[in-house]
Image 1 (spheres, rainbow, N blue to C red):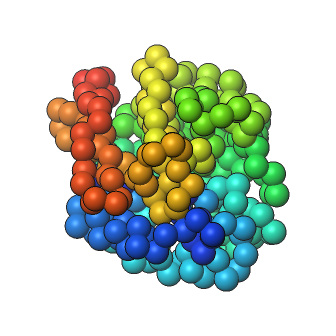
Image 2: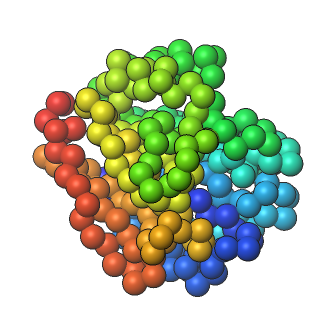
Length: 246
């Protein structure tokens, strides 16, 4: 199984690079992922014309399943209503005999800070705690601060509670975006994988636009990073203990 994790497209924004966007389509479609997880900020300000462009762009990505969660930019200007209209739900779910993926909306309208909310704690537990497959939680906001991204301001206000739920529920992987800097933390048995920006110049230092590819096989799990400029994939990390637990 192959999962592509893409985040922070910011289509039509001032930092959006059409050439890089085309490279993403080319790379993604060439590797033929089974699932694509988009971790939010498809748009720059949540306007309808931006959503139209974002939808057309997402439709060019080829996968059996595409899961999209909103980012803080997407819910600006009542964009959360447009998100639901286009993508049907802010809480997408996927399940087969290999993985269970639960998408969750971590945004608040017109506020950059994140919040999962007490009302969603039981939702996470009910869907992920009993799952026997590899468990993945997908959201926009990162739960643990990312190095090199400046003063932390937008981490979910209830991140501690959600981290506890992830550990207690045996979540294997948490996908996020938001900070435009790819990074991986491991806390106890959970990997927190943050994707960079795939299609914008809003990069940290001299880092390149990128996205992640998660390869899941019977006896190993491999995380790879796609460099959008040179179209190359490099191995980042093996997460084999995820499969050994099952």
